[in-house]
Length: 124
Image (cartoon, one colour):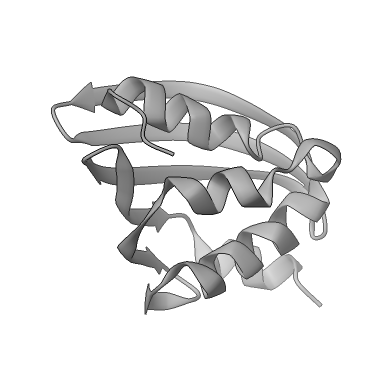
């Protein structure tokens, strides 16, 4: 799958999971990730490859009740997003900042930023 612009690609990325597990499209998501894909987040750390990212996102999406996009910025091959997610486990609303780097119609890097301390307090 190759998507022409950064905006089209990131919109397609969010559409694969933003509505929860019932509409989660793992195959489509994997098709958007570059062979050299790297994920970085406050709990998982830096992880190369799609597998651990998709596993983690799948677990998160199973708890997702709602996603509200607050802000987005697209500049060249990079995009930044600020959004709130209502989740069931742990119960609450969490704010996330996500930074994507794209090239040749694929996502090469996702950096997720959130308050892991607050998240861990609510996780059994």
